[in-house]
Length: 306
Image (cartoon, rainbow, N blue to C red; front, side, top):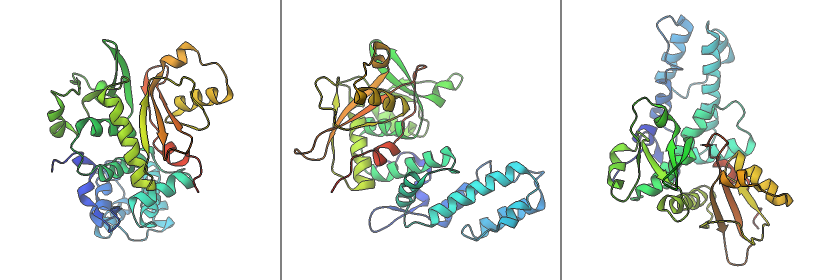
């Protein structure tokens, strides 16, 4: 089986009997190697001692006094955030359960970087065994901001960080270039065609279905749409802040102008069974063509189910 996203550290986790990811000491220790937590040469003795203690036992209880003893204010903040996040992870049976608790109870105090890492790990688990590079590239949109552009009439999504790199080479994922994805998956340097009718657009729907199936055990059918014409608009989920604003306007019956329509990146119809009303999913870009997807909206924005 081909591997992907090795840098997320999924190999440092265990998988429980229910298929969900378990926290290991090795996984926690990987956070201690982050530059924000690795003591610099000028770090005080208390900071070096704290780091060494957690390397020896990453689950050890750290008192508030131990954090307060750190001389550097940034170090105190970083360690407080990290230990709060660690305790949230350890307080649940799996990374998936911890993530669900975070988004349902409020992720205040949890750095977006940590949340994005959890999303990547959960998707790496949910898509384990996937052999379709288009699906995997679409999944990157769940945890990495994208910059969108029109290229020869096609709507292309490219990784924001990869685009910003001087001299960075961005190739659009195609049938011919797809085999390259496996060796490039950790570089995030392949763009995706999101145009209606493209494989990338359909692949994003596949990822949405896998996300809901893995985290909520929901069997959902997700179909790409060209437009919301004569739709029975009984429920919608904005997949980002701009998509939510457009959905709010449609819900109120307000006119949606050409500028807002031009910012639509993808539309989907989600159904759980034939009898239920469809749920419309709206993904849109900002005025400066940035797309920051909020996968948590899929988990908190669905209608109650009996």
